[in-house]
Image 1 (tube, rainbow, N blue to C red):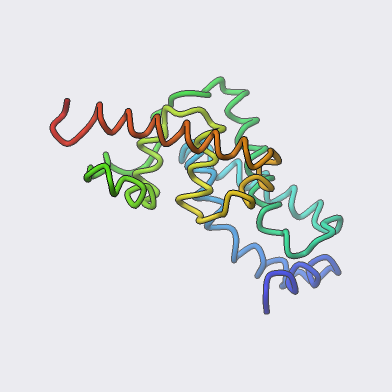
Image 2 (image 1 turned 120 degrees about the vertical axis):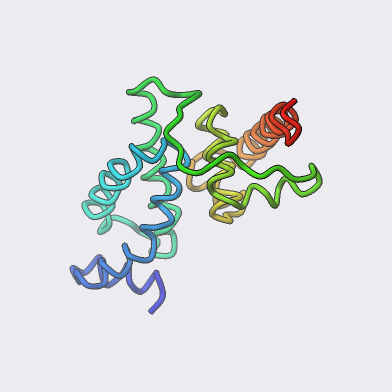
Amino acid sequence: MNEAQLVLLAQSGDRSAFDELLGGVYPALRRYATGLAGATAADDIVQDAVLQVHRKLRWLREPSSFRPWAYRTVSRFAFAYLKRSRRWTSFDEFEGAEPQFVAEDSMEANLLWASQIQYLASEISPASRAVLLLRYQHGLLLEEIAAVLEVPVGTIKSRLSYGLAQLRKKLDKDGPDGT
């Protein structure tokens, strides 16, 4: 059964359909929340988002937009958490070791690894970090990211460009030779 069908069943009150729907998206939402706010806060953020999804699911008009809507909900809770805790730029609660550095021409391939994104992006603004995570960790298209974050595609392109530039600077600074 596809995700849209599960949404329709869950909207009609089918608890097992909601559980299956949630089981299919929860790991990705947890990785995304961890990338935005750190491992310590991710569970609380996703739990709050899942409660919100459960309460508001019946009002979702387009069942095919469930996944972007769930990411959007996690984004809102993560940004609210970051704002409350005033941790917009740097935090050290990321799991994983320092990344293995590779040649610059394959840097974007390096970004596919969650621990590397989390380490490298920890000092980038949450807005750019969200775009980097959604693009390289979750494989969303620019248009999908724009829908999740509710901003124009041009803004997504700018945030992506800025984030990649910041990552390149960090890689140059923290490269394999330690210089």
